[in-house]
Amino acid sequence: MEYTKLGRTGLYVSRLCLGTMNFGSTASEKDAFYIMDAALDAGINFFDTANNYGFLTGDQGITEEIIGRWFRQGGSRRERVVLATKVHEDMKDPNDGPNTVPGLSIYKVRRHLEASLRRLQTEHVELYYMHHIDRSVTWDENWDVFQNLFERGLIDYVGASNFPAWQLALAQSEAKARRFMGISVEQDKYNLNSRLPELEVLPACEALGIGFVAWGPLDGGLLSGKGSETLRRSNNKENYEKYKDRLAAFSKLCGESGIPEAEAAQGWLLTRPAVTAPIIGVRTIEQLNSCLRVLEKKPDGAFLAELDKIFPGPGGPAPEAYAW
Image (tube, rainbow, N blue to C red; front, side, top):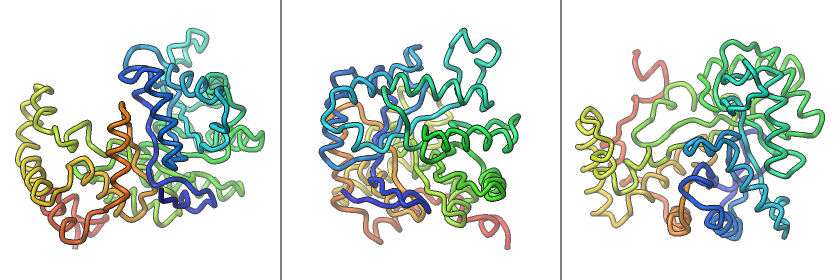
């Protein structure tokens, strides 16, 4: 396993981050336990979850509960894991009253962390993400609550997810005024099909020393080697017309190079500047083993150049991508 520091922090995390959104929905608890054990044995120490995972089956919180029960088995599982969870979404808790709506108020962040810790059966988390931006809440309010949680030893680092670059810059400016570290990592959708973070977010992360974790590395299955099948299942003619040619070219390139498409897509992410780790949201041990092979042989320069022709991206960072 390879490890890298999380942005400007001193914390080392694995170059692959285990995503757990499938646990309790498309992966049973027994399979989830097996996957987490195998991931830990392979050296993956970075686990990602969220308080609302389980929403696919209407059972928000079930994924955290499964992870908590896995921790309770002992064997230093908890001590070996850098654990990330998230707050923002609706947990369908009637006790939240009108505050059940998505958001980042002090009231909601505090209550939802307390609930996450109970489900996870732990006293703290290493990384606590704001799962989405809440434009109605000021950074004074955000930093009041996250700094308090840090000082109480309930969280080590703060993360952001789906934030624009200008908000990352504003957040860090406000945190610096408080002599607080602020945001340590940003998590965004980033893959060969979705390269918009290259315009603003990735350059901002590099400049500010913020780590970057990529969710959706296979773009919902389109880059998995079953892209055409995924498009047909979607019954979305617009998407089919948008992606069919590039996916066919991608499949041809990977076939000629002897690199499975899923491994090529994830390997590409590991070559990108500022990317700490892609999230591998596996459902089976076979998928986990495929992801682990990505570390054995990363794409070379010629292969990467061909990928850029098929998936050209936005043309570089702003403003050069669209200005002289």
